[in-house]
Amino acid sequence: METVKCLIIGGGPAGYTAAVYAARADLSPVLYEGVQPGGQLTTTTDIENYPGFENGISGPALMENMKAQAARLGADIRTGTVTGADLSERPFRIVIDGSTEIAAETLVIATGATAKYLGLPSEKKYMGLGVSACATCDGFFYRKKIVAVVGGGDTACEEASYLAGLCKKVYMIVRRDALRASQAMQDRVMSTENIEILWNCNTKEVLGDDSGVTGVRLEGNDGNTFDIAVDGFFLAIGHHPNSELFSQWVAVDNGGYIITDGKTSATNVPGVFAAGDVQDPLYRQAITAAASGCRAAIDAEKFLKAN
Ligand code: NDP
Image (tube, rainbow, N blue to C red; front, side, top):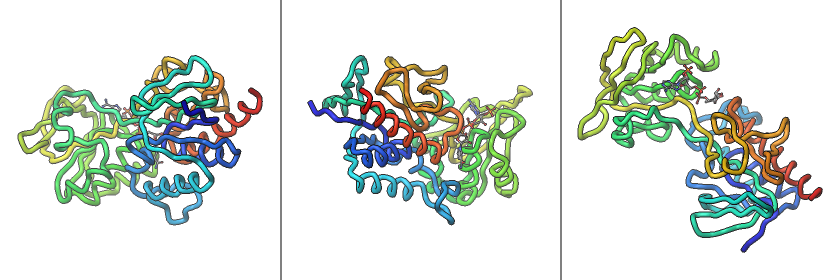
């Protein structure tokens, strides 16, 4: 079985940054990126708040750059999905794609987070037929049409703004009387003419026919039910951390986020470190994910020197 000094799981800003630092520290890191190389950033458009890019940069371009930088410095970047983990003793054993086993002296978990859905049967039924959790992936299909975005956070506002540039009209379905998003995003949404916010509303059902989504049934907090006609229904209600494969071994909080020790990336399992959105319920920014990837690589390097 192949044994590596530092195995990094996850191809997002946290994983790539960990790979950059681990490669420069001569840890010969191996990084596995899963089915969505680049992670959530590949589903965004322009990133204006990643320092160093005066005019912003697209999410996919930023991820390509990080990956290329890690590879140039010597990181071994591979494609494969982790399907099993045994962290009971060192070296840790990780299974890739159900077959390949790899042993790791240290492990950096940077598996990110995944979009949440409402859990309605009708939402499932029309998945890919008008229901989507990624406006930048699927918005194109709704040009000049009417869509709804559920949620009131930064993601919902960003998706609504993006869709407003393509669609005739965008409804935002917000479950209370306020947005959670940053003031800048709230201002952007409020000043966009073709975005209408439906306050105090919950989605009861996604309506559709053989061709896909045709509308949404909403219930106001006053108990009144009404339908709106839409062609697309976009979820933007947050994410859950991709920690399931490891939560048998490493401590996680109530939301499933991996718990790290103080300012470090150390989990409760010595030699296992966590970085990025899988351990961050609070900030969840590309820059904070990258920074935590840096910490994880430095922590792994120190750990290897001491053990
Ligand atoms: P958030 O958790 O911030 O917001 C989720 C939104 O969805 C809230 O408005 C919430 O309502 C609503 N919601 C949750 N569950 C339901 C439900 N079952 N039905 C209806 N509405 C629901 O998630 P985001 O993905 O928006 O943002 C996550 C983090 O990423 C934040 O820290 C955000 O600032 C950051 N971010 C930053 C960006 C940037 O800086 N460019 C871009 C995108 C995200 P309620 O408020 O009532 O709980």
